[in-house]
Length: 409
Length: 165
Ligand SMILES: Cc1ncc(COP(=O)(O)O)c(C=O)c1O
Image 1 (cartoon, rainbow over the protein chains, first blue to last red):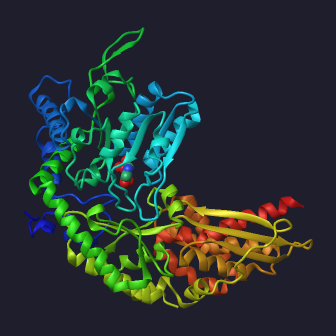
Image 2 (image 1 turned 60 degrees about the horizontal axis):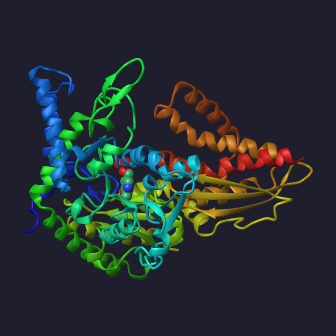
Image 3 (image 1 turned 90 degrees about the vertical axis):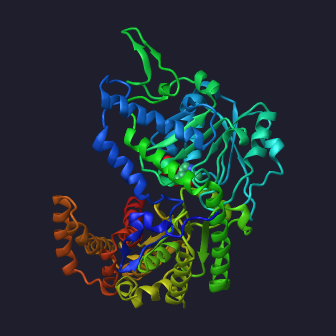
């Protein structure tokens, strides 16, 4: 096993320089870079079969429709969904969560109903529920996060009692924590609740099996898994999708429209109003092929090894000057490192590192409740993917060391 | 790190490491105004006390943030202390002019460019002293908001102080 040694060379952007230094792209939890194969698949689509889908009877319109539906089938296989009709294309994970909150939430959550999320959620899995809560008075409960970066499940039975929906991330975009989704799914179902999972960080990095996890909804976003921007997925079990009211109204999502009203299309098209993102779906399909060829097991192994290397290297090089948040055991976390460097603000770190070609993110990472639990206003985050290697980590450690010296009193 | 030295001038690092007028004032009588940069989580709190003659006789700065936002706030507090409200307003315009010259150059719309030129004229007539050190920030557009955060907050504090009497 293992990943090909020349992997970086398949990503055109990673060949460029920044401030005359080789680029060290360490912001993949934010968005990933794209392999040539994905870029080519999208160009080829536009060069050869571009047409609107589900409406033309001519050759290229049929080919474009097939390309869209083939991509859907690939993505269904990638997450081990039993039926491609369960894969709904959205703009991104945020829209997928909003679809869930609007369509399922408005039909199933009313005044006095409770739902459960966690303190480590991205704003995409918080704000749609706040909006629903403000509108219809639902109760939002929170699973706390322990100082070591794991969910605190000691009170789970009490918290989950009486809720209608549990919605949690499979992997934290700030701490890299991998959550025990199966345990939460079992607890939810035992209490008669459904469970939605934010897979934005998990799906790109680990083999995903919606049936094995026994979950009801999964949201994720294409641009973090080597695919293009502008496409995301909401997966849900078909019987749930069948029972849900539509989300947006317009073309594609209807079977018929009269002056009196309309009837909705079958799933998944019922949730895909308007011309869909065909080229983006093709690109996402190519990304999924690329990842499958590499092998999700090999990716996991690569990232776990690199995680161990990163924790060791940063701690050795920076010692007392650095605090890395999140689980310390490489097997229990993804390759996402939020850290605080003594006496240097994240904004300054990111700026100084940029001069060495090192791209990291500074700020609250769209997870303000988590940062306030951790008691830090902002952090710097380095996050890795298939194309990163030890030389990137060495460059990070070197640049952080220089940065710490630069700002030293 | 030579181009960084344009940004992190020695006087900036000095104000960052030993911020002036750091602390709180009892409000009231002082006004207390908060400013946030939602992008990076920086926050600044300005406490301002204006006496009956319209002079700023006390100012204190709270909050947390990066070296640019913190040093800008520190220099600002030193620059406006003992000044009249009108002089402080003039300084705000001059400082924002210093920061917006760049916006005009990198293709803000026409009106912004014109404002930039007007502000530039203002800049020329007001002595900015140490604050000139922040000029390097305009080469790093994402940091301009860090530098102007405390000034926008002061602007708001002056308005609140005005409406108090
Ligand atoms: C855990 C998590 N959920 C949701 C999102 C939202 O993704 P998008 O902005 O593509 O909708 C992100 C990424 O920013 C994320 O990290």
